[in-house]
Length: 213
Image (cartoon, rainbow, N blue to C red; front, side, top):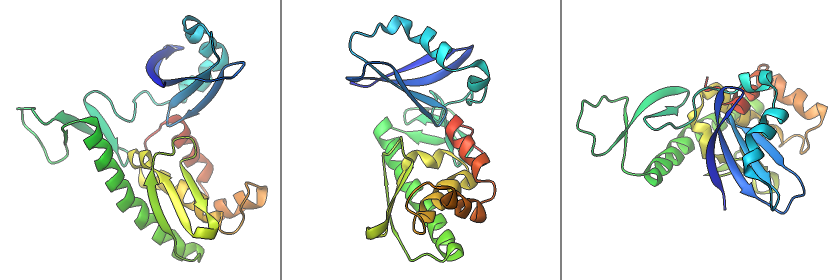
């Protein structure tokens, strides 16, 4: 069962997702400024902070954003920080504030907003890249961020992309549309991506380290 912890690594608090798996050693995957940790049976979690600091250099951790996608009293939407307020909040509320009843309600709202934004960006780049139309689906695909089912003309995107600015979202949209031309991740594939989005690598790095805009 997955556990979420905030672990201080080289002086910076990082959201970590812990998953017990039948591996023989620790496995790390990091994205959105967070780290997913798969650990083997009988691993002593008391060693985790030390093992993380041995695996991630100080310079690497410096690249991680200091703010998470969603905090206790804030949320990032399209790269902009908004106050996050419970529905029983009695103070002054502005139109920029996000009011919620529970986490499920937040996720539902994020998925709807992600669909609207990403659909617009997909249609925009379909015209620029001269691809055929696609259907899109928004779901929870944390590790991949996006998928292109080429034969079905179906694109799937992770709803968490909505936390980031539109140009960062574009880096995933262009990446997935480029698979219409080349299915793999060869050098030729990335030449297509960079042709349509020259700043692709910079934007991809921001997504990896949780930099919102």
